[in-house]
Length: 125
Image (cartoon, rainbow, N blue to C red; front, side, top):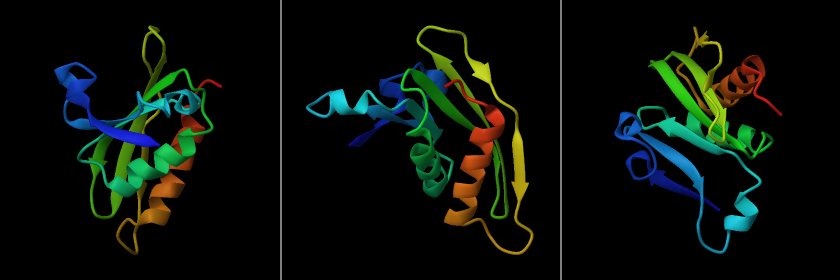
C-alpha cells in the first residue's frame, strides 16, 4: 500500500509543494521497505507521478528519488530526477524534454516518458 503524504510533513518547507510516496508506518511497513521513496511535485499530472511510481518499484529500495518537473504544458514535458541514498549527497540526472506534436499528453506518453527518463538517468542499482 502506498500512502500519499504532503511533503511539508516529511521534508523541509523548500519542497512543500509536492507529494511523497512513502512507506506506511503501520502493518504494511515491512513489505514497503522493498521500494524506494519517491516525491512528485503537486503541479505534475497524476498520471505522470503514477507512471514513475510503477517504474521505480524495480529500483534500489534505499533510494530517495524526486521528480523535478521543470516545464509541463498540454503538449510537452521537461523534467529530471534527483536522487540520493541515505545521508549521501543528492545526484541530479539529465533533463529530458519531450513534445507531442499531434495530440495532448496522455497516460501512454507519461509511461514512455517515465521509462526513458529512468533509462537516461542511470539510477544506481
